[in-house]
Image (cartoon, rainbow, N blue to C red; front, side):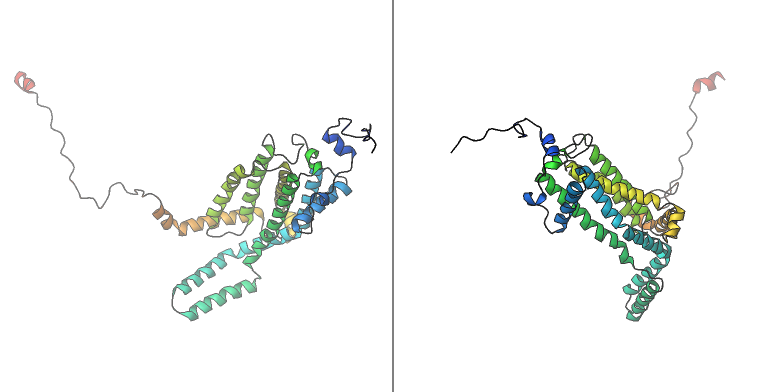
Length: 327
């Protein structure tokens, strides 16, 4: 056997090139070579991002952002329908709550005919006005699997790691497989998530337990922050793009002309005022329960159940015998 061929001047490693320079001049490995990109929801997401990067020519951060926007735009009709259903339910919420309360009271009794009458009245009202409370869960049922698929896909690509991701970032996060060194992206994701949840809570269907639910949603992003600090920046690139799209979508739905064109009759300010009114009515109906759970507050000047004690006599004037003697 002859001697091994010497490294030529075209060999990137012999030239001492950095991995970034190698990635820019040589063809990148495909996901199939790394055991990724199967025909599963996670693999389909990976194949779609690879298509945007290798075939369209976008950098990895741009491919992740563009893929996120493509999916969110495709879900726009579903989001608009969910907003329309929320507006319709908000308009009929007082009557639905009244019928539901009547059904609950009938079930506490022993008259099955009264239960059947209250149930048929509730179902008939929903059918006449084409109301279906279960449609409010349509958006979470669709968006949650997509979010999980993107999250797992990017986590697997960063753990492999896909060579291009190591220099496919932007600005202060050039390595998409590593966490954010300055924790800027986690903070931005948590802040935008809080805004998205706040706007979603204000425009959703109001319920008697909505006050406590919104309070929980306001602290949920802060609870999640310690658990997501060390996620790769590829995940944050997707997450921040998705949250930004949600905020843009919520801002557009405040435009009265656009809401009218999309068939959303309930204006955002009207929905907010209606929700505040329903919260006030709920507090008035349950003020006794809330007062019973809290500390006792004295609402009178004197306890009427305490035994009556006469007021003490006024103090006697001090004795001054020297003044009486001298006059």
